[in-house]
Picture 1: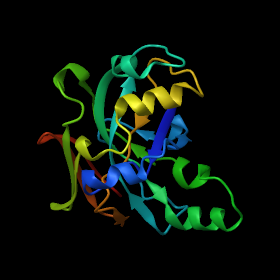
Picture 2: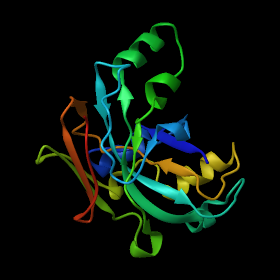
Picture 3: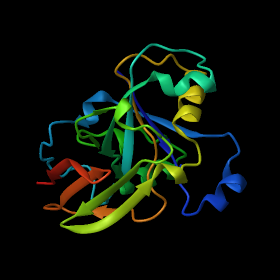
Picture 4: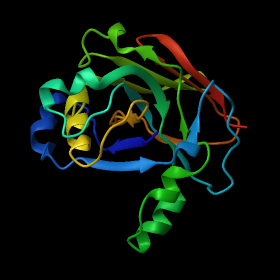
Length: 204
C-alpha cells in the first residue's frame, strides 16, 4: 500500500486556477507506518517542535491501474475519507538547506491520521465535496473540492503515468489554501465531510 500526497492544490477563488494550472503537479509519498486509523490519539512527535497540520480529503484506490485515461480516472476511486497531512516544518527547513527531500518531514510515525472511509457512491459530484477542521472547538479550515487546482481525476491520471496504482493505495489530495497552522501537545482535532464528524483525535 502506498500513501501519495499532492502539494499546493487549492486556491481561495476559482479565478486563480487558470494562471496556476501548468500541469506540473507536486507529488510526494509517505510510508504506511505514518498512518493512524481508528481515531487513536497520537503522541506528539519527538522529532519536531513545529508540527504543521493540513486538512485533506483522502481517496482510496479500488482497482489496479497504470496510464489511466482522464475520462476513466474517477472510476478507480472506491472510498473517500478525511485526514491530516502533518509536516515537521523544522525538519523540512533543515532538509531544504541542503536541497534535501521531504521524506523525513512528512514520513514520521503519526504523520498521516485518517478517518474511516465512506463509499464514493455517497458523493454524486466529486467536484462539490465540503469538508472542515476544528481544533479545540474552533473552526480552522473549510474546504470544498470546487477550489482544487487538479481534481481527483487529474491527480489519478497523472500519478498513474509514473507508477501503477494498486487497490488500497491512498491519495491525500491537498489542503485548502487558507487556515493551516501549527499544533501543540494537547490539541483536539475534529474533521468532517459534509457535516459528518469522521476524524476525532488528540495529540498527547
